[in-house]
Structures are given as structure tokens and as C-alpha cells.
Length: 337
Ligand code: PMV
Image 1 (cartoon, rainbow, N blue to C red):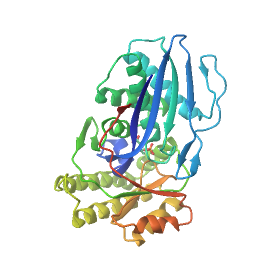
Image 2 (image 1 turned 60 degrees about the vertical axis):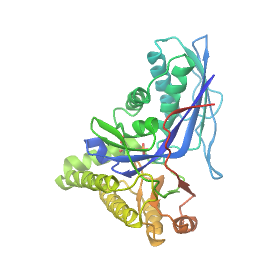
Image 3 (image 1 turned 45 degrees about the horizontal axis):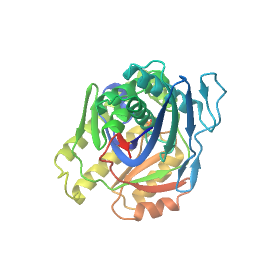
Image 4 (image 1 turned 180 degrees about the vertical axis):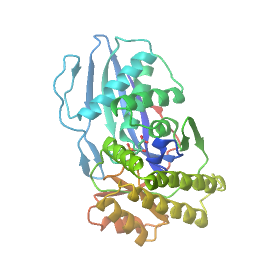
């Protein structure tokens, strides 16, 4: 029996534009998905997933899926979630050269589903690592990331960048630009997450941006402008001392860029009333900056705030269901004892 965990993430900058080869900087956060894999010798796959709770607010992993001869699903599981598990199992079988391997799989996650915090990437990354290790094969994190990307790509009909899976596998802050993927130095940033209890449909939102971009030149320019924000943010982070407390002027500059990024994402139609309400509550509480994170449409915002102001303000913001502080997760995928 092997248990591996992998972190969720927030986007400091660059979601959506990363789909078009612009850079993005996602940061892994200490909210993890844990996947346990136990090989079975009858070739079957049995999956158990917990309810995913967040500060008392429960997000169900879903309804039970139809019975399938090869898969026995005893508890709640969304069909989408099932697709991710299926693909992760396929990747683990392939990597371990064990096409007929069966597994008992248990998933526990404290990352809300579909809310822009990379829940599916974390489950797929941890699942591939646990599956292969349970068969005696250890993959380097870069290969886990690569296989997790292929799994997401398959489930999301090709609408996936490498950002989420790479960040979850490697941990820390990462920069992804086309084929160039690397971890970067970043100080401990005071992230506060606000969650509206909802979720966005990543595929639909990505398609919406594609349609706008094809119809209007200025939408294409908006995507490029997000890339410019990320390039500027990269320079700002490069000037920071990664081991020290981030200086207020560094946070102020990053915050300004986050605000700018959120405005551009809003122009592309991927924000929502509740995300905007939380972003404005954070700004009015004197956060350095705030933006939606991930695909948008609903789900989470991320603010930079080293006081308790944003958390208090979000607690009183209609539409905000949960708030928490998110520390940078230094570890990516790892084995749990
Ligand atoms: O909402 P999430 O965590 O699935 O992030 C989606 C990020 C996008 O840039 C919109 C799509 C992608 O695959 O990069």
C-alpha cells in the first residue's frame, strides 16, 4: 500500500493566457490531495473518495457513477473525477509496464473541486505516483508531471496547459511558458483565498476566451497583455530575497500586477459577480492586490495580505463561503508515511 500526496495551487499570474503560450506563475499551496494505491491481482480498479470538506463547508466529490464491470465505485464520485482517476490508472499501468494491474484506490483531498485550486491536477499527480510506486516503480517528479498532463489533456479534450500538473508535481512557485517549465525562487507570499462555494467549467471558459480571441483583435491583445503582466511579475520576483520576509514594496508591486491581471481576465469574460465581490472586499480591506485564480466563472480568488484584514472582510462578504490562508507548499508530490 502506498500513499502519495500532491498540492493544489493558486495562480499568482497568467491563467488563460498560458493556454496561448504566454507565461504563467502558479504557486503550490499547502492544501493537498492524498491518494492511496494498493495493487489487486484481479485487474479490477476500486475507488473510494471522501467528501471534500473545507472549513465545515462540504463539497461532495459527487454522485455515484453507473456500475461498470471493471470498476466498483462504492461511494460518491463525480463522473469527471472518475475520468481523472481512470486516466491516472492508465498512466501508472503504462509507466510500470503493467497493463493488467488492478488497484484499490482511496482519495482524500482538502482542495475544493473545480474552484481554481488545481484539485484535479493534484489527484492525478498523486494518483500516478502512488500507482507506480505501489508497483515498485519510482518516477522522477518531472515524469509524473508529464504523465499527469497527458491524463488531464485526455479528460479535458485537449484544453489543458501544463501549468497545474507541473506545479503540483514540483511544488513551490513555478513558471511555465510553452515548453519552458521551471521552478523559480519566491519568498513566502501571504496568500489569502476566498471561496464562493461554486465551480467554473474550465472547458467552457477556455472555449469562451478562444472565441473572443478569434473574433476580436483586442481580445488577442488582452491575452498578450496578461503575458506582459507575468513578464513584469517575473522581474519583480527575481529582485526578491527568497529566504527573507517579502518587503512591503515588493508585495505592493505584486499586488498591483494581480489587480491588473484580474481586470484583464474580467475583460475576457471569465470573472463572475461573486469573484468580483470577493476581489473588491479584499481590496477594500487593504490587501496588496487580489484576483481570481484558475479558470474563473466561480470558485476562488487569491489576495495578498499580511494582516488579518482580508479574512475578516471576506467573512462578511455575501457569496463568500470560506476563507483561508494558503502557505506556499515547498514540496510537490511526495510519499506519505
Ligand atoms: O481552474 P483550473 O485550476 O483548472 O485552472 C485552469 C487554468 C487555465 O489556464 C484556464 C487552463 C489551463 O489548462 O491552463
